[in-house]
Amino acid sequence: MIRFNTGRAISGVVAAAALMSAGLAAEAQGAKELAYSPCNAQPRYACPEAKDCPAYARTFLGEAQEFKSQRTFYLDYPCDLKPGEKVAFVLNLHGAGSIGSWQRGYFPAADYTKKYRMVVATPTALSVRPGANGAAGTRVWTAEADDEYLHNIVDTVIDQFGKQNIKTFWLVGHSQGGLTSRRIVCSDYFKDKVDGFVSLSGGRVGTPPTPRPAGAAPPPGAAAVPVIPAAPAAAAAPAAAPAPLTCDFSFIFDIGELEASSASATDKSEWAEKYGCGPRVRKPDVVDTKAGYVTASDQSRGPSWGTTARPGTAQVYVFEGCKDGKVVADVIRMNKGHTEGLEPLVTQKILDMMMSAKGGKLNGG
Image 1 (cartoon, rainbow, N blue to C red):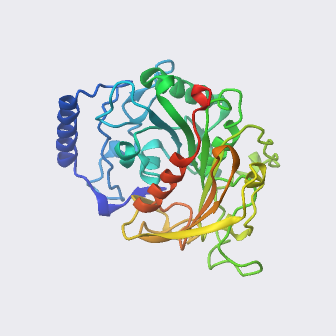
Image 2 (cartoon, rainbow, N blue to C red):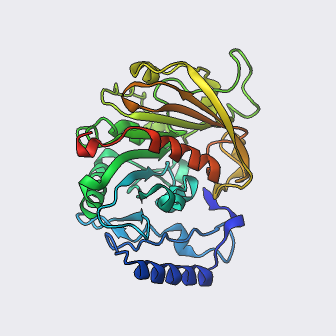
Image 3 (cartoon, rainbow, N blue to C red):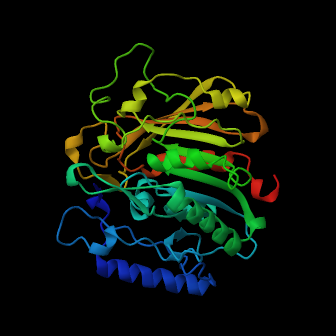
């Protein structure tokens, strides 16, 4: 279903050398191992359907361990972190059919832990939804199998880094991971912890945005493919309306221009209205000359689903003047679908907006 961009391949030998070098550097700086995970980020592998793609690159779920269930996850943080230093915390959730290693490539916040003084936890869902007509199942987040796991990961990070040292905490989710983030953000466990939520093609709080004028036709391919694969017909049930969101958090929405859900047009936001923000203002475009890490392997699903990872331009819209230091913003990645990984500059733009919002819920802020 997915593959890693061949333009950023790391061979097993080079990866091992990189890990050893990073480990020695961390040791020299006095960085410690946290939750069984060293400070150096695991390498990303380029994995098309090729003989030199290591099998573990598709199945490795990270070195950090959530102690209660002993399920693992990726934990990335700065090697030069000082005792008592304040950090931002990001919980980065993959979409349906994916795993944590792919999400680290799709939204590569792990590349910027040092720049933003940031801790990024990237877990993998446990449940597998059966496929239709004998097709392979789809890995999905469920309350029954995963909510406690996510709680335990957060507890582990708080324990390892110190509650008083976490200046802001954000949920980030792609596709079904975004819908899961929306489901849990105001839950009893998260509502007093989470300062912000980034939905990556996983359902805007309100109606999805669009760069097109009202009444304009959607771009070619925009309605060709549903954003999330449908469940088997026998298991289908009417979708329940999402629960009202009654807690407080900043919100950033990112979507590909060619996605089916971007055909719904609005520059309004109920969430912006909640915080008394001004009208949505277009900011300078973000122009990336480098491609993201990952792309869809099934190119036959059309541009709405996604094609190859490649450079691109993103339109950025911000609702300015929100009260209580909240940030409400939309990002539209032009000529992109659902699965092309975010490019370096647009990733950093989203992180910039995250870090500019008021945080501190974990510290009573």
